[in-house]
Image (cartoon, rainbow, N blue to C red; front, side):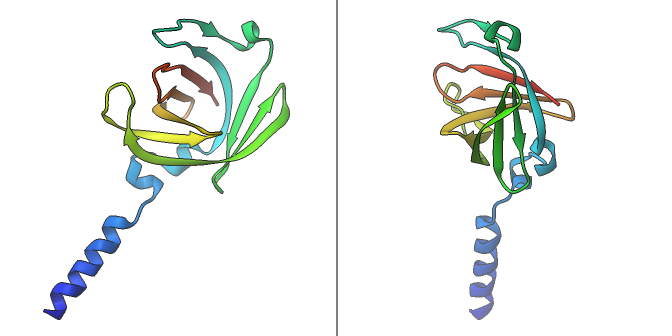
Length: 132
């Protein structure tokens, strides 16, 4: 009986442990400096915004310590925390990798060596594309 309790405790520990690796996102893949390339509005509000049309540049830096630093025209405007986790998409109710920062949650649609695409996890579904 004691073995069963030990096995149960070990299983509980492993099932409750959580890391970026369990999301399918390599923690190193999001950690970097990302330059805003464009944002594309969702179905109810279609638009395309770029640094040229918006009149400013934007970049975000994700740090290994869980911080995101936001710059506008190369001037730091905000430092906040970010969190990556699994969760449900608003529109499709499917499981996605989500990132939450600055009070908003986004679906990580794509992240690779050169590109980061996030989609706001709400009815607007605004897609924002960053490049390294």
